[in-house]
Image (tube, rainbow, N blue to C red; front, side, top):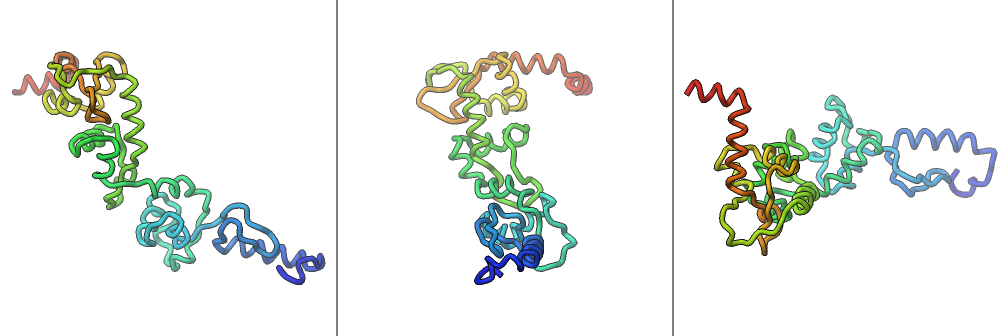
Length: 232
C-alpha cells in the first residue's frame, strides 16, 4: 500500500482506513511516513517514547505523567502501550530536561542553600514538582529571572559600606519573610543595593535601619503579633 500500489487510487479507501487506525493506536514520531502520508508532528506518546524524548527512565517518566494526569494510575498496560495525547505534555517535555539540583541552582544564581530554601519557602522561587521525590526540582531560568528583576531595582553599594545586610541576613535577624522584603523592594519602600564586585542573588543587600522600620511596622499592624505579645 505504501510501495508499488501507492499510485493506485482504487486502494485509497482501504489505505485511508488503515492509516487512520494506525495513527489512532500507535505512537508514531513526527516526520515518519504512514502509508504515503508524512506525519508533521507527533500525535501520540507512550510512556516509553516520552521517556526517551525527555531523557529520563521510564519509571521516572511515569511519575511525571501521573503528576500531570496525562496517564491513569489504574492503567495496567505495558509502558509501550500506555498512550496519551502528545500535545498535552509539550510544556512538560520542555521543562524536564531543564531541571537541576540544589547545588547547580545555587551556582546558577549565586545563592546559598539557606537563601534558596528561604526563597522557596516564602513562595518566591518555585520547586517545580514538590510532590515528587526528586532531587532535581529547580529551573535555573526561574532564579535568573528573579536576579534580573532585582538587578534593575538595585543601586551600587561599596563592599565596605556599613549599615547594609543581605536579604537572608535581614530575614534571619528580624524574622521577616523574604517575600515581604522583596515586595517592599518592588514597591520602592526599601532601598536595594548591590555590592560592588559581586553578582547574583547573594550580592543584593538592604539597609538595616529600613529593615528595622519594616519589622516595627509589621508588628504594629499585624493583629496576630499583638496577641502573641500580649500572651507573652
